[in-house]
Image 1 (cartoon, rainbow, N blue to C red):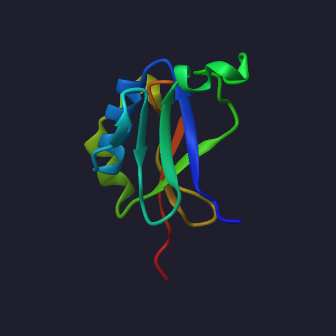
Image 2: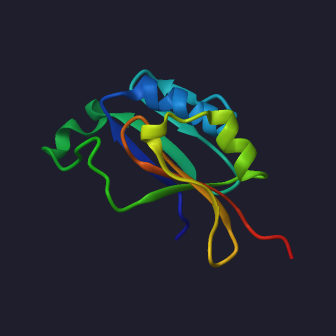
Length: 123
């Protein structure tokens, strides 16, 4: 088995796509008006309208995640944070060196999901 992707279901597809285009520095692939995807060397990040899961009878509820980080390894956390210029209300943790050595900044995307921008320590 190989890990393929994480999908965020949203009522704000264009807003989330624009946010993650800024985070990743790449343009989303848009194979359909209700779906977007960011491909990379690891797993993919998919963003889908609630219309894509309508047949799941309410199993997916946008803007309710309180337990998952969406993580991006970046070259320089402080630079990435400054480039994104998040609103103060969206900052969970300003750039900080964690006890295990990673430098991290945690921000919320437009749906409230926590995004961790991190850099591993240099050895």
